[in-house]
Figure 1 (tube, rainbow, N blue to C red):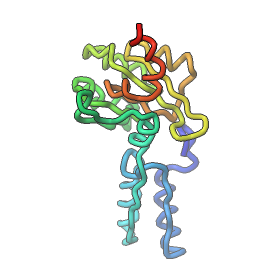
Figure 2: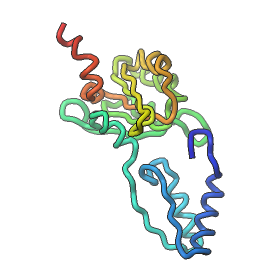
Figure 3: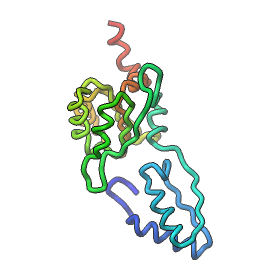
Figure 4: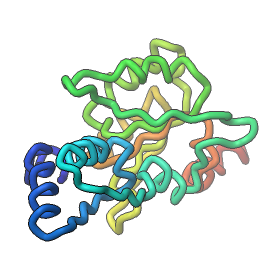
Length: 194
């Protein structure tokens, strides 16, 4: 699956899992990241269980953790953030998830998946809670050769993302920990020296 380009519906995938498990005696469903973090893995497991198909889950590493870590952005760090949230930007119905408004009220690091199309709404939500100066990193195609990242804060990240043509798939990291990332330190070192 790719953003907006699903080769099969979720129902078709569920049916294929059952078909191959019954026909061949086993099936492997390989997914990127952790299938239980916005990967619909539980839906597939539940469907297979309805047909008495025994299942084993081998979790991967979620992009919510791996992508920021490769940019040396920690989720938590003493004096910066004591907790973190991982949220999807969009509800099943297509609206902005209300959890972003809740997260914007905290001092936690917020990792937003599937959020580039909702960036304007996300930034407005943080602005409503007085967080316009909060650092933000958006990492597109994390872990791949064509990875690129923009950094800024809630007030200017929309401009930065537009200027660099940032699109999905991307991981959005909001919080003071962004200041600890290697790119932030490299780009803003000269400002601290002045």
